[in-house]
Length: 95
Length: 486
Image (tube, rainbow over all chains, first blue to last red; front, side):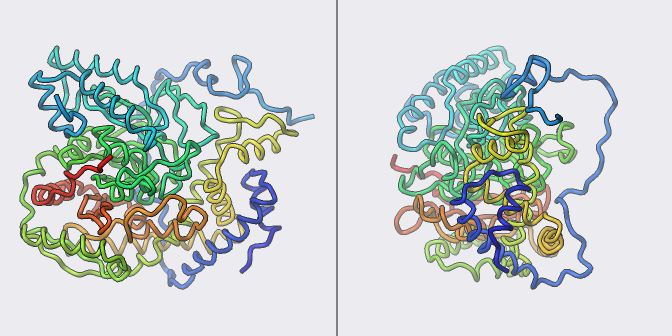
């Protein structure tokens, strides 16, 4: 299967990446190579094999529902590219 | 005292206890070494002399008032993806170039409470994606044994800092070999503990089901001390496993006679490098002399390890890295047209090529029409790989194999060939897929003087067996005692 430029555009939009034409052309070839390599996986019989999400048995650790110190608002906002002292600022999304 | 920087943490701790030296003296000697070597090696993203000296003074006070702990006063380098409160943590990425965490990672907390001395943040591949430390936005780290070569990655700065005696020990993280590979290429000892053994709270996430923090040192004794410090249950990480760990140092003097090491035929069939083959054969002889038995075994699904890994890791990465949107922290593009455009430009400007490539790969593999063919298939193969290991450990205490197919390659050699770069990790990746502990220990040198490591893998939470085996090996050999002529 050959990756097309349209597919690269589609995936870049999903991944929220504004790629240059040069980058798209480069990734088109490289993704194709890598995915061809991945296609070796289809040769492995995996009927009746359970998928594995992680190496440890997942359990839900429980703790008492007590109030603990958390970040101060100033600390939480200190790294924000734009803030007004109490909130993160983002471009307007609703007209 | 001469050559302080070459001493192990265990030796320095003894000198500190006997008041023959102060933590400030040790730290100043390390900072001097860093000053001399940094222009050549570039092991660090940031060095913090002020912080280091303050921490050393604190360590000296702990020693004075009798509250010193085993690693008090020992200088350490921390990979640049572990949150260090009020200091920059950049993850080797432009997108986090100005990020100053408002909290400490759990491992950083443990290090601070121990009274260790943080020298600075070690260079790494951007977001730990790479096998060479060339994808760091701050430029590559050089291998101390040959500065035209890469140190391995992604924790290349940590490995180079320890190999060149800039730091006594270091922390790295290992998602597909990122501790063991640079340890092998730089001639130091590095361990990836069992998944869940060390808290990941405050570690910048790459692929959360594979990431694990672990130590680098020049001597296994120091690895044991570091494991004692790091392997603690942490309620802040829901994958941190609450198990009681015994003192790893008690395994240093245990004889390995009667233990069995498995030799996976699939791994050795892949070897074509004579230096690696010779080093592994000689290492095997050392173990045999120590009374360790060897059995051949088969891990048939390992052939699919890399392909499955490079589906799963980018899938998790594409999801984890969605948080870099220019809102809460990190870089934000200056010019954009609306919210979505802000995301797209911010990320395009902030991420480097390898990170973009993996986001693209992961996004593609998770998109609705390909999910079954890639992610689900890879997750099933992960089960098969884990079952292979489980079966193998029924007949052996550890698995003995190479770390990498060949010694360190040249800077620039593989940077534009993703598949060749990915294949470097063929022997290390399966360990992360199954969540097992694995160690890389110096086992010899190539004909042109490059270090070659061996890898030993144990079953879940059996790090003590790795300590026992490597300790016995290091008592019989001197590969780990050799220093690069830098």
